[in-house]
Length: 235
Image (cartoon, rainbow, N blue to C red; front, side, top):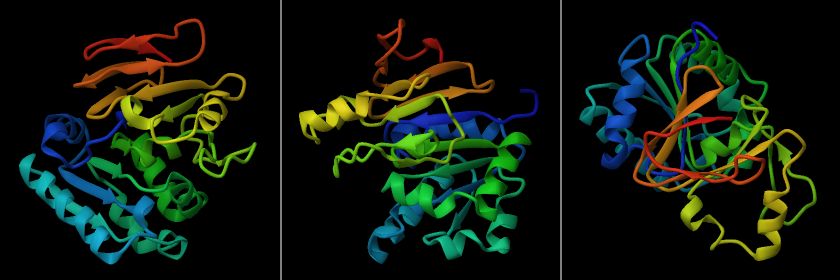
């Protein structure tokens, strides 16, 4: 795995002061101080909401001494633009923030922007996803509201991990029947619950370190338990 950048999965808190030191550590391990921010998962929300993501992203970039590069990639047409893909190259950190994980995966998969993200990460750029961003990295995304038997395909960057963000609150938001669907993962997929203001990060796609105020929960398999900050988990 030599040459790969750090990869972080975050339960909540992107661009907020509580995660500033964590984001600073990610960007400082990359090749530059360029902080590429994609609010693609919120692409169907209001223009006011999209301006909110840009604003708090700038505030975080200023806190940690980074250069904000907010890319307005809100549709699949945007994600096909070569000029946006070029903007991603050489970033210190690429961050996919929250919103709708299904829309995020559908918008990015198979596009020049997604190819540039993966290529940059493989070349040493740190890559992070928070909430919807973290969920979309997996092999599939269950329809926990529509209650379809099969979810939609994810970006597949992490083929063996299904993320449950906001874990300490998540299952209070959906019906019990949806909980059971979400926890029924395909063979070989680990379900990882990440509390709010909490993250896991790896530089080898095998051993993950826990950061933040809450816990990380392995919800299936022989090692099912919860882990506090500074723990190291093999997934």
